[in-house]
Image 1 (cartoon, rainbow over the protein chains, first blue to last red):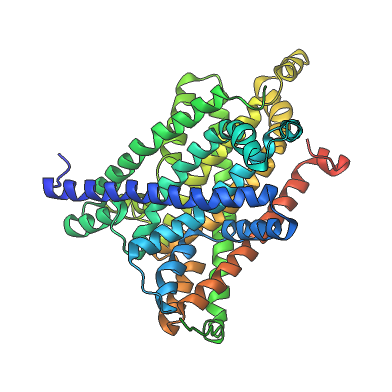
Image 2: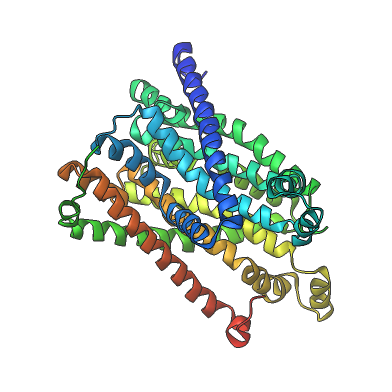
Length: 216
Length: 227
């Protein structure tokens, strides 16, 4: 029906698998760093707080494509030979960390200040206050925008194709070069992304209704 | 690991980088203007009376927001060319950016429209204003003013995302950078310079949108307070 052979479709599905893998890597790496950034933005001493903010502003003001070029071309030029997968994962994680850090900072700050004061009055240590009082509430506030940002991560893994990493878009480009059916190939790719992103978007919207923070 | 940064090499190419930056800014401004118009139109359709128009606009918004810009650019540039609708790289880039940012604008403006209290619509109707008059004079001005900060962020993101159009060889800043780094073999320095240029461009976009907002919102100009 599509004019593509089974082998070609299978190749594209394998690319799709890499898109999912890259998304998970970026979310894990970006999540770890982003969490540290969020904590630094809210609880660290002033100079660290300022540095975390500067980092976030710099990364958010730079296109992801440039970040990927920097990790992919830049690291080897500086004598650090890295696998393309590592370079892509590093670039995507850096990107994700800045946005997740900012989302989670907002969530931490949205927990009413009295909660922490009350916990401190009960002689809970900082760690206990975080684990038992602040984080459980912040996680609820953070979940809908975090799921929403996962959609951005999935879509932005497509930029890894620009540096030759064979994920879904790159796989599609290669098949297009062989078959010259760009319309069907790229629409098929768009449909695959949609199949992955739409449920996430819908889930994020449902969560938003569930933990309606603004109207509590 | 020892590496000496040498910014002289990429900076010697400043005319082409500056040209690229100007192109990026131009591309972004044009896409912003048309994307805003498209988004406004779709937001009105989505909140309007016609169920069919609302559903159509909703499908457009969901389809665009859940697929990558890169794929949209490829569909417009390569896909449409293969079925006989041919654009130059620039036209394709602008078209894809407008289609993309239109969907995000629609979603943001819709939120603004829905934030206008019902009682104001009823008050407008009581003054014998028509449906379009209510929309034009009662609903849209505060709706857009309220979501203007969100729109500003969205259009700055659009400017950053316009770097993706380098993939279809639209000669903007990132494409210029790619050429400079392949000439000089100074990739780190080139991309650092370009990253700095994008930071400056994002400040310029913010400033332009602030000016546009100040001109458009009479209430804010007079009172100086956010809505």
